Length: 262
Image (cartoon, rainbow, N blue to C red; front, side, top):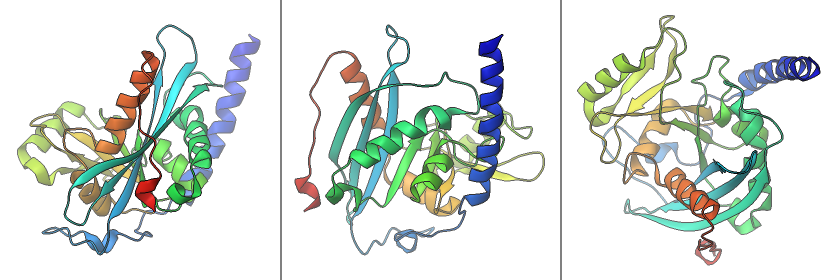
């Protein structure tokens, strides 16, 4: 009974916190790269440093996880290179509760950001999170949580659709497939624009779902995500996932480069 009561009290606190996060999210472009993108071209004035974060959980040890933070450089030529990766073992203080992922993973991401060398941290243009942003029942998903807490441009990227506001994933997937690379807006029954379904990389029928995290408009977020996808999943997130899973398997080879930022 105490455990149930404690969890109930905790979610009440979290609901209030999510309301605060949602109010503080900046939905328009307040970043240094929005002008580099348009419907027809990518014309950057400089290289961009796009980060990704992922947390992978052990199937054998409860609440044991590896968090990985990566940085990919998107060059003016459009080419991509992984230039930084760092992982750390973490223990999760809270259980997973649907729609409260931010309270489980945002502290891990914040800790990884705090541990970055200043030369890396200060060059990051945007962070992609493996989770939702505004595409969330209370418009306060993981990407919003991290973006508001850290005052960073962030984007939510989800592999499956969180079906809020009458959304049906099958219908959205079919619409995205019909629209091809341009993607399709994810609009709920209320008329709310929640995000965009994009076919990226080598995907033909299975989109990813992009939503605003903080300080990046949906249009800019969609353009940027498309540019950092070799495959279906954006490279910063894909590489973070690969590295954290490798460490869980006991493999300890990963890159740790600071010289790329000099």
